[in-house]
Length: 168
Image (tube, rainbow, N blue to C red):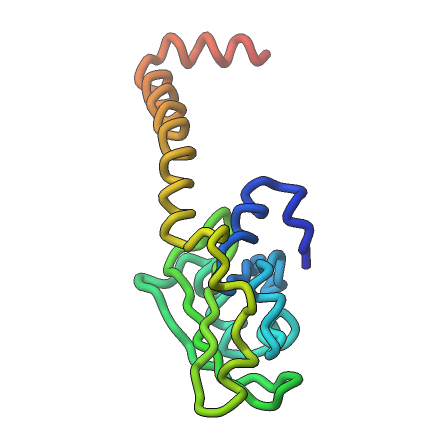
């Protein structure tokens, strides 16, 4: 599992999210877990990849078989005993990866507070909606520009033929 969020700006951004999040590869391996997920006492980065429900859901997300988001409640055995986690999967993969958002299920007593990331209330951490808005404003305009140029090139057979000539 890659924890070096500094190696890619997007991973650094995801690491700033206060909500626990994990990214799974097509084979079900954890390819990234943000700081909030890594600090949970239930150790989701260790126990969740081997859970049969999670593995099945990851395969469905990566294969594009979901039509709506799904949330699973999973019991995990961690350092503090048994705890429950709500694991939410958006319906679509992102860059071929399954995204899973983790919410510790609150229970009475000390177990409820031990499975909460210590720094979720930190004012410098961005919320998931703030990060999604930032991504939309930074990534969508250049992508639309590239798609528009590709559409123009595909609609003009001469420019497409010229492009193929330059390749040979």
